[in-house]
Length: 272
Image 1 (cartoon, helix red, strand yellow):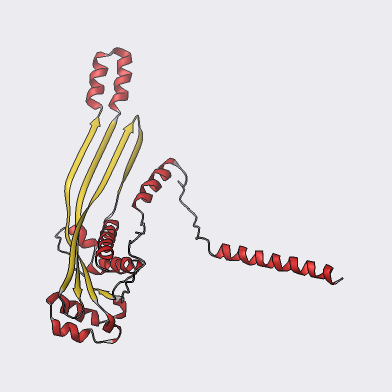
Image 2 (cartoon, helix red, strand yellow; image 1 turned 180 degrees about the horizontal axis):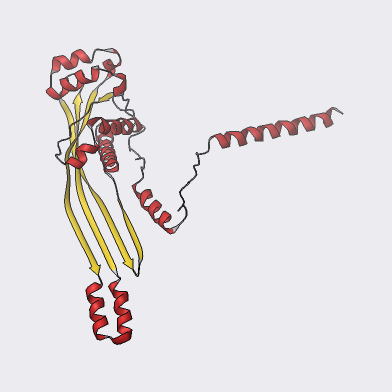
């Protein structure tokens, strides 16, 4: 009798364990979001999403991520480019935000600027001027005592260096075909006249420098520079009233983040 009672109890316990595993599995699943776009799943949607996937953020596998780096503070860098398009989109704080994110993922203890308050301005001024006494004074406050490095990221270049355009207008050729081709040629000429294609591509070069400074002496520990190309393009085709167009490319936000990732990869691999 005791044996027959224990079997259902054991079965219930096993079922409960499986239920817990199932619930925990569901809670650990990635969030899934719907797509309310009226063109979702269409050919244009698939092409646009494929282009967006190429430009989407991708985490970097930092080679020395398993090794903890020195404690550091990121101060806003300088944007030395005079390009209005870039300077209107970006402030030094935007770049520092990307840098804090990537340095944290590379296992550097980062004291976030938001926790420094007004002290951030004093720190930035001290290290930009190389004022050793002021730097030592500011680094004796709270959590700053453990800081080994002060890091900044500067944009030195942001310019469009190349642009190319080409196109085809079938109007002239269609007129010639219609003139010498008779009735059939006239129809072909009208069809040819309706063909129009346009294509344009622009290439930017954006360059970033990083500087690592000793938190106690303001002396430069290391620096590096890298450039990346940014290509943007557009194409359009129209035939017999049916048109197709596309435009895209990696944006300035993505380019800055990729440059930061490139710089942090170098810092992680060389200076830990």
